[in-house]
Length: 251
Image (cartoon, rainbow, N blue to C red; front, side):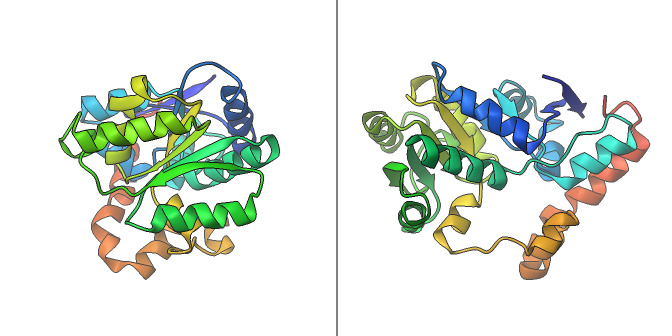
């Protein structure tokens, strides 16, 4: 699979359709496959952090979630085929699970979010087997408490439920760290860190209107809705400046 190296982060150059085929194959293979969906903010955070960089680069599938990555790759003539968001890939996983009768475990969000998300999933995807859910407020690897009894209890809960697919919505970089630190003791087929996807599935958060999605302006829509995100959104213009002034940054 072709990869585009963006400031040391190796991103798979694939379309949503290609990613869907890959995860469908993962679901019939042995072992747990990890999926990371970095956006511009994540790349900027990981480029100088060897631990985060390793987590991303050693994941089985790394899709370009941010439109900034697509634009940056085009500027440096190493174009990514398209943006493949964590949300869109998660929905594809739900569609595949519904078609094939796979099971799903939800981990993350505030108390009640995963429960509401599972209830809505069951309505929209009735053939999915809901293996279980748990909120994201627990002590574990993602917040400096590796092997805490709360974490071990959740891992046991997941393994006893035997899910095929696991959604982890703890936000970056917590979800990526948690998956990385625990992937060798979790039984399943596919595990994906998908941030706010669970909040959207629960009905607590709305995705940007389609026009914003098509124009690659979801970040702007979220900024309008949540002005406090301005510190995070600064990563996009900063990334573009890095691209413009570092001709070897993308290869």
